[in-house]
Length: 290
Image (cartoon, rainbow, N blue to C red):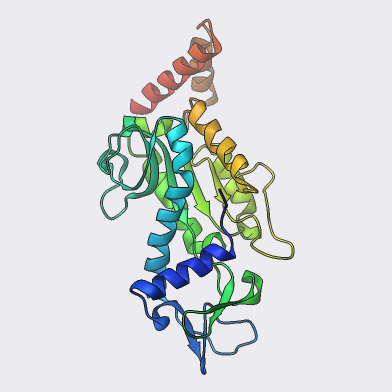
């Protein structure tokens, strides 16, 4: 299966225009021409096309589900959009964009959710609408004034905030991996932050499903792979498969070194590494609840 590319973006425009959207819903009008983004060199700016944001959001959620559904089936799971789980703070307004679950329904229990995805994808390159639903490619994201997908600071902050909200909901949330999916690189300002977020376990990484977002240099991968550009479908399947195969735990606490040493000493009395780890997590959670 193919990852995100310019053909997918053109497909979005054509399908939207053929069904329910007008040209002004999807393109900025600059003079007599229509552009997906304001090209660099234009002095004039335009407000964000809110009408397109909602349309591309629905499109990318379905596109991602279709892309990942074969992987979910391989592990006996269902790929579901708009998953609601009140225990995880995911209500109708803040539902998970996509989740792998053991049951095929939108309203889920925490124990049935095996992987959560937050989708932050948008139109990346620039295009011109000609006429009769003809779309002309103009250049990659470096040729226009827009900040698509993970290049937007507000998109990054919203994804991080949602992950924190899930992590701090209930104990069950500590066992669910959270992945943010985009279709652009990240900025240099977030290169260190995403590695910290991954290493701390708040979320398991940011993935770009667009192997070729630009013709020149861009951040493909951070040092600790808090952000990673997926090159092909096999790599994507391996990354997701690893999260589904491993039993992971998120734990966070602030205790004295003395107390931490006590907990480690008690946990170390268990026989196996797995038992030691489970005992330590149990002790740490118990300490936080006091």
